Image (cartoon, rainbow, N blue to C red; front, side, top):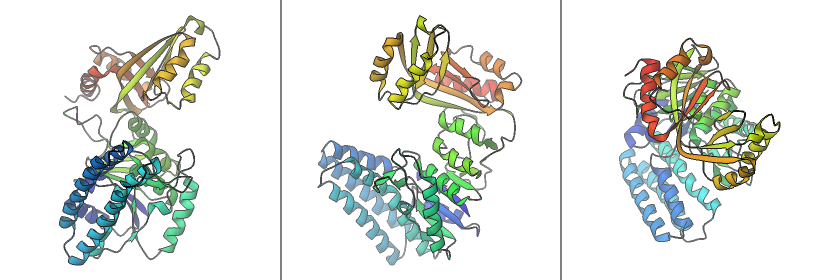
Length: 440
């Protein structure tokens, strides 16, 4: 059995749903199909929740009506028969009745999670209605019946495996299952979610739970590219990546794949394929245990970085200093992306300013604190790049015009990371595309 995940752009228009239906029926292999919400829906639901949180019910109602009108237009094009259209209208009516009821009651975070879940519930039910109309045999498998997270918001892989296995066994006569990405239940049994990009996570968790033959992630680009095609004119798709390489790229900014998607598949050694819904015959990128080749493969950039430098002469030969520094970030549950040290200073980067003021205040007793916002981490990723001939010399020769404020190298055999000010991001990516790949 394989897993096929389709993102918002892949189901965002009726004709795209038709393409998805064609793709999932191209072979007879048993499969679980994971769908995101229609493109734009989650952002709209976030807006509705934000309006309700501010007690602006009139604005929330306006946004709900606008989104409902979009769905009525969508289903009018999606299905053709009176019976299918009636069912689709009933589905839309049910979910928007729920959203309208929420505007009349006290708002809380649990309700907000319910709001955010509506997108995936709608997309899968409407897609199921279309499949029924076309006579395509399948079973709509509710993610809320098996996908769960614990009190620390971590997926319960063992419980997911047990529940999912039983559900599949109960419907052993079916070869195709449709389910929701993103949504789950938390430790209290409430509706919750796996955060943004969670549909990739859902697909990978399901693939690990059933030990799938492959986990296919279908988007609107033909695989992972060697650079950001939105910024660099000429890029190429990467044929193969190791799990470790892919994890580095996803974490440090490659938008096609969510960082959380890697570890479940890697845990059970399930290959992940990144494929293009609009070009289904393109080779895409396969991610597996083996890297396939050595050398630089791709560049990724992560924006919104904050650099914090702690300078203190007391660091000199002082054991335990770094532990105390890290404990401050641990206290505020703030991950560190990069770290560099010298005898008198340590510099770290974080990607959120949520607790910045409190962190800086607690660091001040250790020395002089400098904070630089609006930074970008540029990561050069590949297999054994540190030991590959000429990589370092090419890298720094290429970036002579760019002021680099931090370099992280040696912590991973797959990654060299640089910190530059946001204003140099585009120049850095373009220079590296030319200097490392020979692509202008």
